[in-house]
Amino acid sequence: MLDTIKNFIERLNPDIFVQAPARINLINPLDAVEGDYWMPSVAINGIENPLSTFLYIKKINKKSKICKYKVIKKQQKYEVELDFEEYLVKNIQNLLYHEKSRLKLFYASVYRLLKTNSHYKSVFLNQNIEIGIITTIPKQSGLGGSASIIIAFLYGLVQYFKLEEKDSNYKEAFFPINKDIIAEIAAKVEDKDLKITAGYSDRYIISRGGLCFISYVGKLYHRPIGMEPLAICDRIDGLYGINQLPIIICYSGVLHDSGLVHEKLRNLYLQKDEIIIQGFLKLAEISWKSRFALMNHDWKLLGKYFQNNTEIMNKIMHHAGFKHGIGLANNFLIDLIIDETDVYAVKLTGAGGGGSVFALVHPGKLDYILKKWQERLRMVIRDENNFKSNFPSYPLELRKQLKNAQFFKTVIDMCGVQKL
Image 1 (spheres, helix red, strand yellow):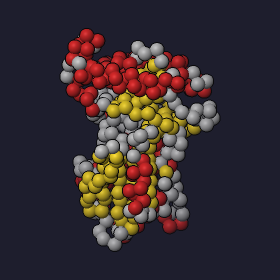
Image 2 (image 1 turned 180 degrees about the vertical axis):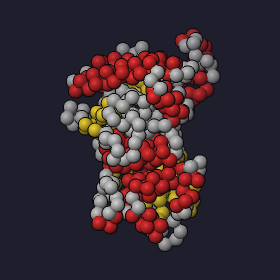
Image 3 (image 1 turned 60 degrees about the horizontal axis):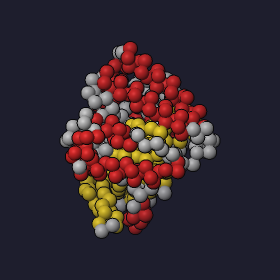
C-alpha cells in the first residue's frame, strides 16, 4: 500500500510531500487532558497498511483547492481514487464557520496557524495551491488519526511557505515553528478551535516520532503557547536498544469519540473527584515504573503494568458513568485473547468506548498470536453458540459490530512527521 501511495503522489509532481504517523499510548491517559504527569508513547507505522497521513502541496495557476483521496483494494491490488475535491476558502473571517464541514480539521489548522504567525496570512492568500491528502488510519480508531491529519496539514504548510524559522520578515512571530510548536498548535486546533477535549500526547509523539517517555507536568490548564511549559520528550528507543515493540493492534471497527470520553473525565478531575484523582495518581506511579520495564526489555513486567492500567481505567470510567467501562467491544477483544500464555497484556491504545486495543506478546510469537486472535474472532462472529457458551455476559449484537475489525502489525516510526 505504501508504494502505491508514494507512486501516486510522486506522479503529481508535488512541491512538498509529507507523512505523519499514527501513535499508541503505552500507559495512559496522563497527558494533561486529566492528570498532568508523564507517560510512554510510541509513534507507529503499520507493515501492510502504513497507518499514516500523507499530504502534498503544489503551486497551481488555477484557484486553490484541496483534494481528498482514498485507498481501495481491487483484485488484491491497491489503488488510489479521488474521494472529493473543493475550492479552498480563503476568507479569514469564515474559516471557523467550517467547523462542521468534512474539511474542518484543515480549516481549523489554517485558522490557528494564522493566529500564531501573521506572516502566513499574506503568503497563504497570495498563492494558488493544490493540497492533497490521504489517510490510512481508520476513522475514530484510537490511533491518533485526527492529530495525524492536523499535524500533516500544519507541517506541510509550514514547510511549503518556509515558516519554520523565525526571521526578520515576521518580527512578531514569538517562536520558530518547529516540531514542538507544531505539536502545541495542533493541541490548540483541537481544544480551542474545534472544542474537542484532548491532551498533548498525540500531538507530541506524532510530531517527534520514536518511542518516548514524555512529561506533561504544568500543562493541565492548556494555557497559551509560552505561558506554560513545553512537554519534555525523552527519546528512549535508541537509548534502550528497542528496535521494535512486540505488539499487535486490533481496531474493533466500533467508532468512538475520544473528546466526549475525555470531556467527562476532565471535568471530574478538575472538580477534584477523589476516586478520579486517586486513579490517576496510581496511573502516574505505574507509568514511571513502566520505564524500567522498557529499559530491561522485561515484557512480562510491562504487561503487568498494562493490565493495571486497564483495571484502573475500567474503574475510573465506570465511576464517570460509562456503563461498560473502557467499552464493551474493547473488553471483549481483551477477553478473547488474554488467556493465551504468550500474551502478556491487552490494553487500550487511547480513550475508551470503542477504537482499538493492542496485545503485548512474546516477541517470538507475534505471528502465532495474530493468527489465533483473528481465528477466535472469526469463530465467535460466525458461530452464535460458540459466542454464547464462551462469552455469556456479552450481548449477541456485539458480533455484528465486530465484523469490521482490523488487525495490524506495526513498526516504530523513527522520524515523526517528515518530508518524503
